[in-house]
Length: 296
Ligand code: ATR
Image 1 (cartoon, protein in one colour):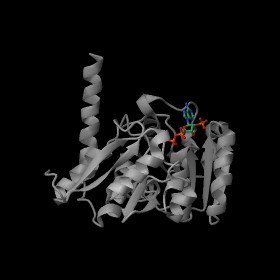
Image 2 (cartoon, helix red, strand yellow):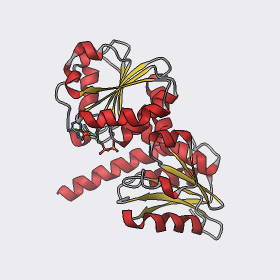
Image 3 (tube, helix red, strand yellow):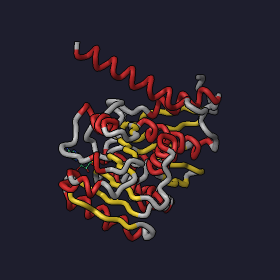
Image 4 (tube, helix red, strand yellow):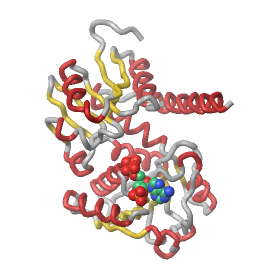
């Protein structure tokens, strides 16, 4: 890669950003396509976000990703927000057109592409059970609903948070029956029998942690289980799902697909097939090695 006077800048704004895999993904794709672009990490503290965003616009960056903790706080700093990002209430990708900043959310399309790629699953007319009610759950509810899901049920450990999520997105998503359910229902096989897809949007599974009592045997035989967690690559939930003979997948597909969608927003081009996924898997391999080395 050669940086010269014409290199276009992109990057990620977060706090912290040092563990992000996005620089690896995007720089790999820029390199393979021979685009004169570079993707950088921008560590911006919450109180500096307005100056940070104004600075990026003034410097003429082509666009940037937004990650924790700025995905919601950035909304009032942008000039336009897509209807999907508005429904989700969070932005993960910004395009800068001559100082006009447009906020997108590619997490939802990332999930839909992953479900299609992993399971051949299309949400239209289907019933989905979502575990969790944080930002990742919001993007999933909006994407599934906008793709025609008949019913989405949010089950969250803190029931009130699930109820709040449903109440806040429902006005934007009139085509889908949106409900919340108590976490205790997850141990009821009869309850699970009503769903075509189970999606884990919580952090449970990271580092090998597991849910307590999940009655996965209740899911119908055609159902699939998608876990947004990707470290470890095989989560306890996936093992449990395999144990009852259901198709399962980890969050790598979604991580890569949200990045591919952002790449296309900035460049107008598709990244080369498999390129960003390879970069992520190599990055995770390297990170695992680092942990092993540090613990020695
Ligand atoms: P994100 O934006 O990535 O979704 P978040 O807003 O912190 O992250 O949300 C984390 C989600 O994981 C929440 O739904 C949280 O449940 P609570 O609302 O009850 O806190 C869920 N979560 C985290 N640890 C959990 C655990 N041990 N068991 C069940 N749910 C858990």
